[in-house]
Image (tube, rainbow, N blue to C red; front, side, top):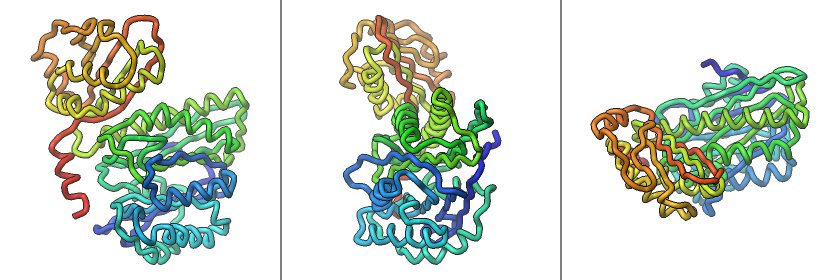
Length: 394
């Protein structure tokens, strides 16, 4: 499906020599007018220099952003010069964009602990700005990738009283993924006029329902960043009631992106959706869903098309959620394999064949009055994950 691009944004990417292979590794997103912005960042105590500076800049600018600068191939984290590299890059972008440095948010992705030569970035900036175009959205979406095999984009257009509002997002991520306030790198552009405080509420909740319910391998990166911009270029200012419609659209875009990350998990062959319902609270449902989605034993069973439901109820049991195993049913690909905490009859050969599909659904239902539910996205574990991460630096 063709991406419906928001008005008032330009995009560019170039090869700056940061990657070992000649592929665009420096990207820029510019809002024609400074946009209201919201962001969520990693809660890893080892936070990359761009994360630290972006947090500071958002606070200083009171949520106004003109430019997003992203590099791939180096995380600019746990290095002696990290802060200086981030600050110098931001200052150089601000000069060319004619804006305050606080209105520039940097992001980096790649190897941790390797010094990043800032000259590679500053020398490439003139070409990066010269290449700005409203039509180069996908060039940026490709430039930010690392071990990803495919570009990840999504969009929605909604119609409000004053007119149409467009939301488009891009993301990267394939490994080192267990969200904690954000995951990987994600950028969403919107052309509605929405104040920064309202935008932050929208993004925080949407993240909770999307990126924070995504896991590939249980690792939370040092660089995780998700940014939502709203520049008002459409001329549409949503009413208080319409903000809920915008929030729902942002959530759908982010859930779409989260599912794409899980499908493209390092070495993955299958996308796994974990559904939990009937829990005592949303928090309990989330605990159960996360435990199942993170379980290497569940992920390898699905990888081998093994309907081993015992691993699923085991993960739910150690999740920390309060529920009755004797009230729990489990379905795989729509077939009940566990009834009231015990084995249910099923045709093993037929179910194994269904589990060969690229999309697998694990559905855990708890009987009773509980209304807590959650959906998680993950992927299977294969030998490919080990091969990729055993040689990541080399």
